[in-house]
Image (cartoon, rainbow, N blue to C red):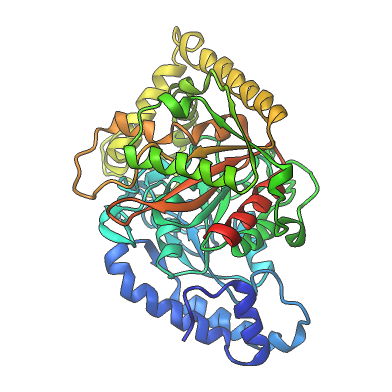
Length: 477
C-alpha cells in the first residue's frame, strides 16, 4: 500500500529496493481516482490505459539508473488547458468538446523526459476564467477536505487531485492566482514561477502577458522536483527567457531566519478580509518573528488598483485570444444558414456565461474611443504596481501576503460574479509584475478547511522562495 505522505524520493527508494513497481503505483492512483472522482470531480479525462502502458514501459529501466530522473514513474496530473498529444484539450469548455491535441506542450515533453506518467486531464474553470472552480462545462470541483465546499480555481482539479492523493504532483496555470488560490483552499503547495521561466508553448492562452504554468504538490521537495523538470528556455515560446536553471539541491536548502527580512504590505491592515483569515495571517507573522525573521511593514500604494487593472488587461487579451474559436477550424460547430450565423451561434452555445462576460468587457476596453481611457491606462498602472514591488524588494528579501481575503466558500453559496474578482486581490500583483510567488499551507478555519499564505521574491529568485518554504515545512508543518 502506497502512503499518501510518501515523497517522490521515498517512492524512488522503494523502486530501488524492489518494494514497489511503477505498475503498483499507477494502479494505486487509478484506484484512488475511482474512489474520489465522484466526490471531487477533479478529472475531465483519465488516461488509464495509457498510464498503465507507460508504467510497464518504465519498469525495465529501473536497474539502468543509478540516479532516477526527477519524476521517474511518478503519476502527474495536467490541467486541461495544456496540450497532451492524442488526448482531448477542452479547457473545460463546450466549444472545444471533441478536440484532440496534435502536439505536446513543452512542459509535457519535459515531464516525459523526466520519466513522469501523465494520469489524465484535470477539471478547471472554463478557459481558466474563475477563482472557485465553478465555471466548468463539466461541473464544479469540490474540496477534498469537505465536499460541501469548493476547491478554488481556476486550477481547481490540479489542486484537488493532489490534495486527494489522486496524483503525486500536477501542473496548473496561473493568470491572476489560479495556482495559489486552489492550492491554499486545498491545503497544498503551489508555485507561480517568474514570467518567462517556464515555457508557455502548448498552453491554451487566456491572457498571454500574465499566464504562467506552474506545479502543485503536497510537499516542498515534490514541488521543487516538478519545477526543475519544467523550467528552462524554449525557443518555440517568444516569452521564454534564457536564464540559468536552479538545481534541486540549491532549492532544498533551508533559509537562515537571522539573515532574512520579511515584508508585509500595509494593505493587509485595511483590506476587507474574513476575520479567521486575518487572524491566521497575523498569528503567522508573530510565529515568524519568534523564529528569528526580521519583519518590516512595507508600502505598496498601487496594489489597491490590482483587481481593476488585471480585469482590464486580462479580459482585453482574452477577447483577442478567444476570437479563434469560431466553429470553423476546430471544436463545436453550430448548424446555421450563413457563415456569420455559424460564428455567432457557435460562440453563443459554446462559451459559458463567465467567458462571454469577459470577452464583452475586453472587447469594449479595446474598442475605438475607449482604448486610451481603459486598456492603455491599465498598462500604465500595471507599471506602477511593478515599480512598487521592485522598490519593496530592495528593502526586504521576501514579501509575505495572505493568498485570499476569504476561505473556501460553500458549493451552494450564492456568488456575485463581480465580487468574486476580489478573491484575487493579493495574488494578482505577482502576475502583473511577473514575480514568482509560492503558496504555503498554514492554519485552518473553524470548519476545518485549510488556509494558507504566499511568499513573493524578486524575479528569477525562486530559490529564495523554496529555501523559505523548505525551512517553514520542516519547522512548522
